[in-house]
Image (cartoon, rainbow, N blue to C red; front, side):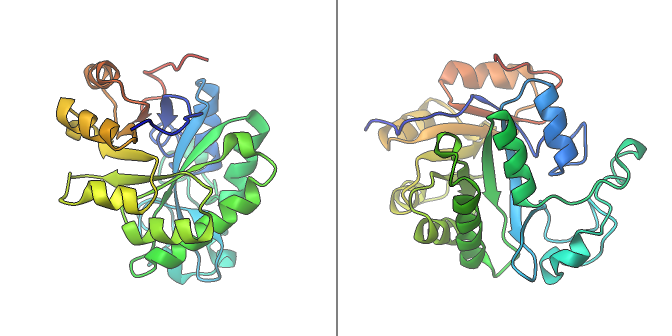
Length: 248
């Protein structure tokens, strides 16, 4: 089966440049861009009042000065948090980012985005629908750089497909669980995004046979990147924007 058209660069900055700057913030995306990256990965979820914003964890403690479940707070409260001081003094006061602010950054530079739908538990389908609707609105005038929507949660991808079937989707896997191929087909996915250790000749053949593009996370060592490039992967997600210099 032939794979879908693929406009995206091979090298993708994880959570912006989420080790050298506070992850999922605009500062991280700017730093990734300064290292020559043209595509970024981020995590998106919903505030209590329906704003799509960037955060990896369900709770706020690890990557901000907030407390509790992020999705239980309105954006007016979330927007006042410090999401930079935990990383370093350089980024003290850096706020949480909305998907809209990241979209504007990408569009200003002609860059691409991989949006991982990261629902608050119990909000899978609702979050998938909301993220897809917001992405449709934000990229309405930039069809050449449509984001790739991915998730570990099939219900989130189903919600995204329901809301915006035209946006490309990818299934995230940490294990090759039974039925993943059927799920990817049912969800209309164009890509499979796996823990890099899962990729070998067999899984590559399975993905290619299903017409899926192949991405790997999170690749921070040269030996791992070299192995994946030899296997023919389409996308490599890395924290090490300082180590891997993507060709422009």
